[in-house]
Length: 389
Image (cartoon, rainbow, N blue to C red):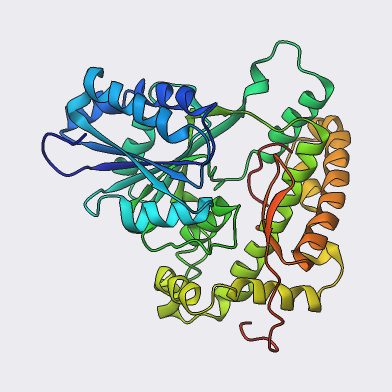
């Protein structure tokens, strides 16, 4: 399924792993977007790539069927092409790297990254994100607001109400980026490469690199445009075991993020920071364990679980501090619950990291342990979005 003419102006990458039960809803929501009619008016074209990574379910088959239907029946089918790309390796970071650096068209001006289990809440969402980057020259990325699907329930349970309250506490960061859905300039995205052992919190890394020009300038929140009229829904983790395991994964990823942004990036030269993608690619090629070596050294120097990363025990209350006084009082119990979950999740994360576990997913106790290499002394020498708390 190919475009009739011209190179794609927008390249959409859908990163999918075992989403056979949800991706049809996501794709139907995607093809209902006004972006395609907008591109027709602008003379743009779009490519839609679904990167199915390490899936063992029906994700690829369902996607191929819906792509074929859209390519033959969609009113603006002349404006887009579709392709399903199957890669055997699991992992969002690897799928992200391959979409950005290998699969997306080199002539695309704008890249859209989206998860395969979300649903757009406005038909204009993608149009507004892409047009924002066209008109806002300060911004290098544009994002909306993630909304938990349980927010639509008329009578949420106590656990669901706690989950929704913590989400409201987390909002308000002037440069917050949600990794579930965002639009980014292609030239900016291609300066970034994800370390494969990060496994999560890719949005935190992108936010830090984009807002500081790869550590070369003071942070500028305006580099990430947050649109109040763009939002999407996703299924939140709400059971106690899912919430705890998801927070464990987040604490593991935040620990790696701390090493990358606070230890690794400052020690790079200006030319190396400018060439972040090339530096990471070289390190991954020369020693796939390089980030694990850094983590092993970090854990030796900081054996207490509350030292995994700065503010590990205080970030909940710092978010609470941003609220007006009366809301502080209302949300204080919620912040305390979140603190307790973070405390236990951090202990679990430190325990897993000491065992060499980096790949971990909250839906099941399923990980790929790989022992840390015992590092030579100091060879190389923030919180992000979560699906639940």
